[in-house]
Image (cartoon, rainbow, N blue to C red; front, side):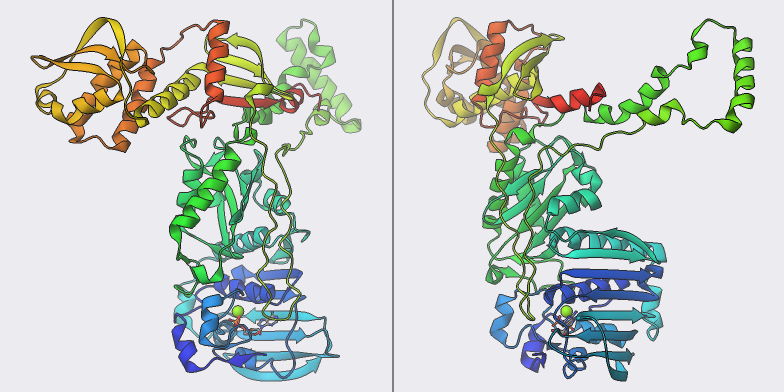
Length: 613
Ligand code: ADP
Ligand code: MG
């Protein structure tokens, strides 16, 4: 039942203009369609939505009697009392959208419920009903908005060009199509159908269709009780956040809390740019505040830390698997076909040695003779088909089930996806060592190339961190004691840092004259490592006036780099050793600076490069 909210409840709802641009009208209309349990939504616009917007759904429809009430301010079937505000499950709840849109346009609504024999066509100009008649029509609702802002010239001025307005609307529909993959969306712009989704609930397929750049390197499924969705591997990033879509209880939101959780989930493995991520978050309606902005885009989580760490944990579980290993070669494979076209297809007659003049002459003759009747396709055409990028890591996300209940329809919850299998180093066999740097290992159906230095840095880093965090180590004596010299200022505050080194397992003593003598080192370090670290540590205290966790982390990261010497040739024994140490790391996938420790090339990629697939 559509009722007008009493003024007490109405005042509690954040006030503000809902309709600023055509895209805000479209958003409200499709949210109404979703709330109405639609299985199919068609959006048609002309001139960026300024002259014409049509949203047609096959949802529950509105009865003849209630069709006018729907246009009253604060008329809604979705909430009735103040307690409902804490438990909002439908998208719309303010009861303002139809009133606001109709006030600034010429609006036509055609609607019918399944149980009614006829529907109703209602026309409003500037919010006033100009006609209302019974009509035959399909079940569901069509709203046509023409000449938006025709009676408010001031607002008309704020609209952007037709193309810009259209692009905002198209982007919006794409986002909703991803989130509600169980609903069929069709987008028509200036008479042209831009896209149409299947509505079969396969979110991954919708992402691939509408965001090919996000999906091109494959997406890794994420799944936990609070979040499901897909993320890219840490190497496949975009330069902006455009590839990041977050939905909370079926609403597209922007949220720093979610961004932070996502970033944490990658555990420093993103070297540059922003990973792609489509995340569906489920939160108790009472744990979020969706009412802080009339646009409803920004939401507030009442338990921010839980959401952040929950997302971080789920994302990290997804990317800390075999699927999260950056793929090698992918870019080269894409560009390979053209290159080969030019080199591989010599013209049969031209292979013998000829002078340039004779060659050109012959070409001339040939073209004048052959071209008119040339019925055969050029040889190059056959080679130009390139297989689409394979999405091997794809596990379909089952659809949010479309609501069938009368208004308000329940907000659909995406079904959980099975998590990707963890990466198992035991499956790898050693195949070779190239450029004195890269280790080749073979898995079941793919080749892995390890960067010896990055792997070393990772192993070193975790060894150090573990050593640093576990207190009280007894020093391991060194054969020849060594000294380290520090600057005067650092020497004068040795009380602040000497104890830390002792606790880490250094046998270190003041040797006078800004020097310290080291007779024993932590058991988990080599002499070189120990020397570099102690010196760096002392200096860091001087520079920062205190050593905190971040400084220690930086320091260890830095000394990792210096500890791994370039082009150190490894023996096979050392390689095996390095592999087993890496396998034991908490994060074997990247060095402390975020570069990958290894990449993957699937047999499929290789075969495709050779044109076998
Ligand atoms: P709200 O969505 O906040 O309730 P609106 O002004 O958007 O407010 O819509 C008012 C009411 O009209 C809704 O509560 C709903 O009952 C009805 N309504 C609007 N659009 C549709 C639709 N596409 N299908 C069925 N009912 C609709
Ligand atoms: Mg609404």
